Length: 407
Image (cartoon, rainbow, N blue to C red; front, side, top):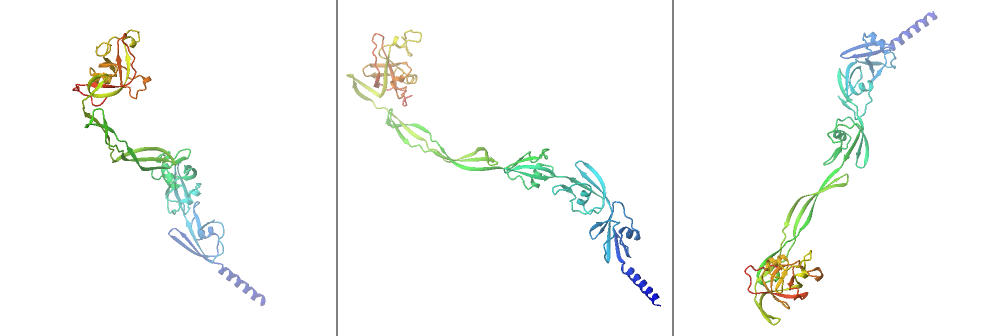
């Protein structure tokens, strides 16, 4: 009797244990939901019991992670299994396109499963975090490693940009203002991956510039002939110059003037020259003369054979045709044109006429001006060397074409 009792008790305990090991199983397959209550823990058998087939590329998701169909589930009171069905994904890369079947949850996961090593700078469209919900074409361009020389340093970056400028922007090294790059910003990524950024700046400065004043002469009836006086002092003008300077990587590469604005015009210095003719009378060498002009000139002497030509010939003629003899004098060409045939009186020499052209005051005489010179003609027989400074008188009558400014 006791033996039978214990057998019934053991069977009841076993039946109760079996009933307590059952769990509620929910299987989500797209829009289809299956519910089971079973003690089975092997996902493959659970799917078989629910009559749900699993493709080779499909996967089972439990608590957010993929589980193997042939690995028992951990102990729990209930389970929700989600079936992720594989879809066809086309991956379009610079090297070509390929299609894969995948049940990955996102674009990025699908690429990684397809063997692509992803980098944050890769170009992925749609983005890596977009869920995979159906067939999709993914455009994928891996980033290229670049070395950017900028601000005295070399920066290594990765970029999937199609142009140099976009690569620099993606790397946080955009071209600002007048900056430029080599290769140009619009150029494709260089094969060697080398990019140089040139930091360019331009500055504009305003500087003062002095404008020199001119000097001009004006006739003055208040001044005697051959006198000068300052009528107006000169004053330099003032201009503002706009200068543009360009630097590249801290080094000046160009500087140019863009404009000049006159702030104050220059004021000419005006010198007055005398036009008042005063006739004076004096006695020189016992001779009373009237003159309108007297100049201090260096005197020298010449005669026909003492002024021989380079071939040794004596020169008896003069520029005006007058003979080479006492009474004819020579001056530099400009003075000859101004005073030709004018009458002079020269102390120690006498009356004279400007009738010949000479080379000018000899260097040995240390003349302050080569024009202030007169060469006294003699015959060879009467030659007298006269060298020195003397006052030369320009005799009346005053010529009609009077020269006010000595040439």
